[in-house]
Length: 272
Image 1 (tube, one colour):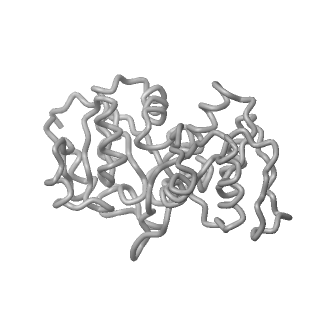
Image 2 (tube, helix red, strand yellow):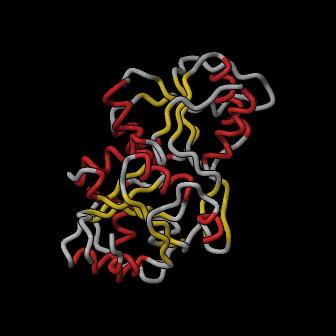
Image 3 (spheres, helix red, strand yellow):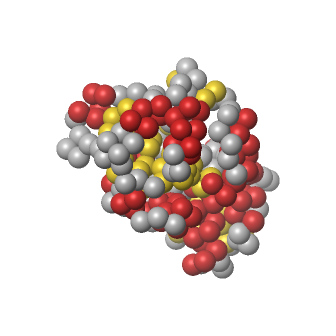
């Protein structure tokens, strides 16, 4: 590989695996990069599991990984808020693992309003900021509580903007759908985004790798998040066609990724 790249940052869903199976070429491609001395790091916008769970999954699929080599949007949000605004009281539209992640950073989570009648106007007390994430337990009560807090001046944070999450056989709604609903209802815009394409996530990733952006390549399947984030940081980028993006989508871009690959096995043959 005649390339000055020292490190590779990989998206997970649709790039390395889909559901519970590694995508074709992923295990072999990453193993070959590691054998050639390249560092690898994995980033995910999904805050559904702690980092060690993603590391165990990668290891189980044949890609040995430690939790230190995984960064999630939930981890980035918790890390950032703990270092900038640890006093905020957060209402989280998210699943239990995200709540535990944020608590692990010493942040204050407002208890859910489980006893509130969702048919009534909820006037939430003690909420400084609303956090919106991928939440498969989302219901009207949660949406209403977040709405009421936002229209009363609570700040508006999110883990990730993805509209959908790729799954075997299709996709399911992700955090972007909830964000769009709340933005539409309140006229507010998310002020802090932790996951891709935020600079927060890529800055944490590059610090973890210890390399400058021009020495790292970002690989992902989403043009609007993975590739956009890499370009924003001044990195080389490669889109894999194993997930959301198709070749036609790439050809429509005014600033396309540096490489288009069919699988991660092709990474070892890049000439950059």
